Image (cartoon, rainbow, N blue to C red):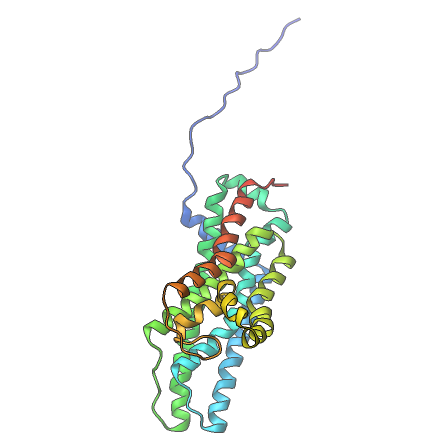
Length: 276
């Protein structure tokens, strides 16, 4: 009886180069927009932006109303704030609901790099769409002025653009952070829209106008109430406010509750969660 000697097993332990971070960002960008859900959300957002553009020009044409660049920019930003945060949510939750995280973390075991790549992709989306909305708003300002035979009003300063950009980024990162925290699409979307739309515009306003304790407490809890004094110099009821240490503390408190806190806790959950 004879045996055939097998070749010794050789395991290649040569270290491989890590995946470049920009490549991770490009992959996460494609995951966000190159899907059926992402394309539909972008198409609906674009349709809403064009609808807002057309309706604003219709008002100008019917009433000879003067629409400044600042007003046009605010109008163009509304559709972006309605649906784009859902993309920031889906970039996280879709992988956990469809169980593709195993593939993602197999190619890139360092989960923090994946989270950062997703966050950078979300920020890039916010900046790209905001630039397009501002360009469309500038076009609308010129067209509106031509319709009424007047001069365009360029009242949109760099400070206004900075605040508009900052708020868009804050709310997109808020959706992203809540997605990291819950890792579930329905619950994240529900919490996001309750916190960013339902409570500020349907609950907090009533409490703020009726109770003194609400005027003291709500700016610590809600981003809109905390940021308004810095953006306009007035509170949400239109009363002048001198910004100081208290207002800074209120803003930091609201951002910690809805952005920084969920972002840190959610990242820790992703780093420690079992991938199934």
